[in-house]
Length: 559
Image (cartoon, rainbow, N blue to C red):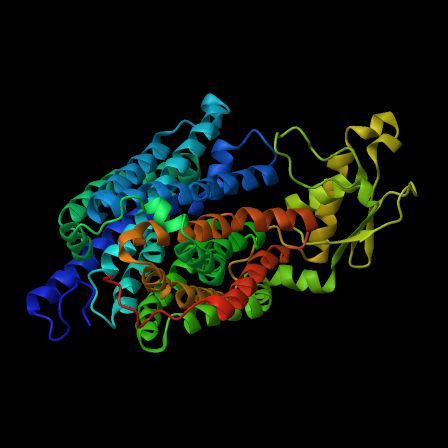
C-alpha cells in the first residue's frame, strides 16, 4: 500500500511532515480569505437590501437581497465544471491562483459600487454581476483545495488533513463577522449602515495580496505530478467524469446521498440562524453577529474532531447522523431559540396567537418582483402585508369563497376587520391600508408583541448554546465530506468529478436555502415554515445515503 503521495508506507521523514503542515496551512489560509470574501455579502444582506434594492417594498427588497446572495451560489456548479477541468488538465496550483484573483477583485469592487439612490437599477444589476463572478471563482476553489490537501495526506489521515480545509468556510465567516463587528463598534451603527459597510469589502484587496503570496509558495500536488510524468492524466475530464455511467452514478449518489443534506444543514446552522435572529426575532444586527461569532468559535474545533473520527469509524455514519439529528430537532431548536432570544414574542405567540380568516381568492403571495404591488387592493392583502412588515407570525384560515365578508384578523380574543378598499366610501379608500397598519400596531403592542427584541430580557447563554448545537451539526456533516468526495473518484478526474456534486449541493440546495425559506415564510405567515425545506432535504439524504452511499475511508486515492 502507498500513501497519498505515492511513496511506500512507513515512517514519514521530518521534512515530509513539515511539508504536509505547510500544505495544510497554506491551503487553509488562502481558502479562509476566499470564504471571507464570499460571505461578507450574506452577513450584510439587510444593509445591502436597503442600499441596492430600495426601489421595492421592504419584504420584497430583503428577499431580493437574499436572491442576489443566492446568485453567487447559482453559478458555482459552472465554475466547478470550468475550473475543475482546468485543474485536471494543467494542475491544481495554477487553478488556485486564478480563482483567488477573481474572488478578491470582485469583492473589492462591491465596496466601491454606487447604490440604488445614485444610479438606479444599474446598481443591483452590477451587484448581481459581481456575485456571479464570485460564484464562478468559488466553484473552482473548493474542489482544488480539498483535492490538493488529500493528495498530500498519508493513508489513514485524510479525514484529519482535509478537516482543516472544512474549517475554512466557518473560519472565513468568523473572520468576516469579526471585521463587521469591529467596524460597527468603532464607527457606530449609523455610520456603518450609511457608508462604513463598504470597509470590510475594501479590506479584501489586502487579503487578496496575502492570499496570492501564500498560494505562490505551494508546489504542485504529488499525485498530479506523478500522473503527468506517467502520462496518465485525463485528456477529457468532463466526458470521462459525466459521460460514463461508472463515474456519473457516483456523482448522483454523492449529491443526493451526502452533499445535499450537508449543504442544508450548513446553511441552516449558520446563515439561516443569523437571518432568523436578525430579521424574524428582531435582534439587533451587532448582537446577532456577536452571538453567532461566539457559537462559531466554540464549534470550529469539532470540524477537526469529526474529520479525525471519520478516519476511524468512517465518513458515512457521521454525515448521515448529522443529517438525521437536524431533521429531528430543527423545529424544537428554532422554537427554543425564539423563547431565548425574544421571550416577549414567544409569550405573545402563546397567549395571543394571530389568525387571519379570509377568502383565499382575495389573498396574494406577499412577494412583489417589480416593486409595483403595495398589497392594498383587498382586505386580505392589507392584513397580511401589515403582519409581514411587523414581523408577526400568523395562521391562515380559509373562509368560504364569494361570501363578501371582510378579512378578520384575530389577535388572541380581539378581532380587527380589514375591509376591501373598493367596498368603502371613496373618501376612505386611500387611507384604508395605513389606518389598518396603525390599528394592528396598537393591537399587537397591547397583546405583547415587541417591536424589537429586548437585550435585557434575552437569555444570551441559552441563545449561544442553541447556536452552538446548530453549528455542531454543521461540523458533523461538513468535517468528513471532503475526504468522502475525494475518495469516491479516481485521481485523473477527481477535481472535476467531486467539484460538481459539491457545488450543486452547496450552491443550489444550500445557497438557495435562505431565499427559499423566507419566501415560504412570506407565503404562509408562519415563521417556522421555512424549516421544512432543510428538514425534507436532510431526510432524503439520509434515505439515499443509507441505501446507496459506499463507505470510502479505507480506499487508496493515488490510482
